[in-house]
Image (cartoon, rainbow, N blue to C red):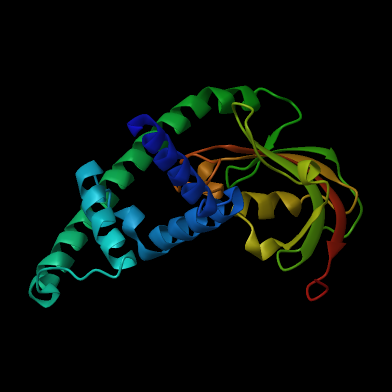
Length: 236
């Protein structure tokens, strides 16, 4: 009798859970919303450890459930701000050291790469430090700094990892030269419509020591570019 009752309870519980179960899409909606809230609030920049994260989530769950805290928030507000500021400052300092260390390692690894470039006859170096290889010069006029261009391109790191590609997206890109990194802007002014060029951009002409998705700090960028059109200022 007890076994039959227990099975009935378990079956009822399963049915109840299924009635209120989230669909995969609904779960992604809420997960995304939570991710956005954390990123926009700056919580992700505090470097919270596991115990600190659990304390934060405990408060979040209480807020979601409409529960009140059992202490005076006003009395701890100053201390809370000081604590959060200290956490943010420590996290920034740690991240800066990590980025500088990664950038230094990447630049050391790139030294032999640039040594090889210097030995290639078709590769030239501009006064700014940009290495480039013109495969087809294209037509005149060349793009000016204030012009826009339509291009197909592929960007990769010296280890071959591709971080961006208009070819992969299946459509060329159009943008103003004053909105791209310095090395890209300088290189595109060397060829006209129909031109093809390969750029080897050192970090100081690229993203520097910044941590960009797909591009580690201190990275050398390699771009293969095909210029499809040159648009005068105001045409785009």
